[in-house]
Length: 309
Image (cartoon, rainbow, N blue to C red; front, side, top):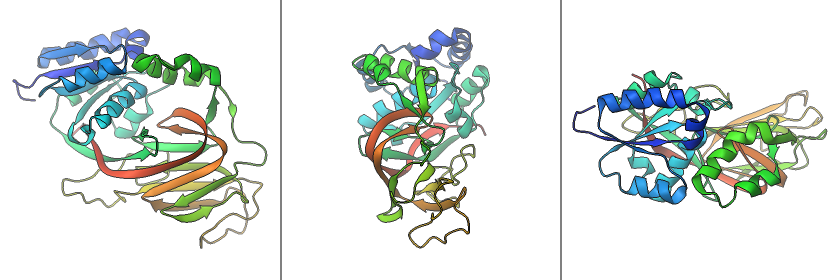
């Protein structure tokens, strides 16, 4: 990193409260290497002001997956997400940091801070939904996703950025039973306008991923400088798992397996629409819902960050 380049370090309040030592270590490394303006936003407006006034400073986020999402959404609202490479120093508040793991970022704060100071920059696809939400890695519906308590959502409303971060950090400990009943999910799923699952054939889960595969833990699709990729850049992987009770699963020309148990439909699509009766989904592990309709669209090379060499 050039000596004259300074940093805007966005410190996630939830991370600072949960693991102040990791935050301190990361700040020590960053400040030792470059002039740094440290910001601990108190609400969304505070975060947006800091980003709008950053000038030529490199943006580094110290915090949870929720903190990274908050910064990404703020930059997206300003139309600058795709043009602003991010440095990320993950801090675990007890719910893990799956996003950083999927990106291949170091878990140790000192190592992650040095990556954020480097010059090895990459672009990645993301998914945006029809209400402006973002999924930087994956979306999951069904098995393994739990419904958020209505009281928790209501308590966080109106509390700005800190409230959103706290809500995501508490989701693991304040969620209730999985939303898959004995008969599975009744969902209608369209991929690029084609119906690939319908409500008469229940599903166990749906996984969307900007990672070249439907597996939850594989690395994300890396897009080269000319936009080319061998892993399906510009489309999301779609994995639909049939409910064991669905004896007839496999639609839209997809061959039907001999047995409906654990049947899968795999495909890639640019736009995916899911509708059904009060389903909950998790974008990068953070639960939202229940909702009845959501459309996700892949944005190729939608965001950039500094990664290990």
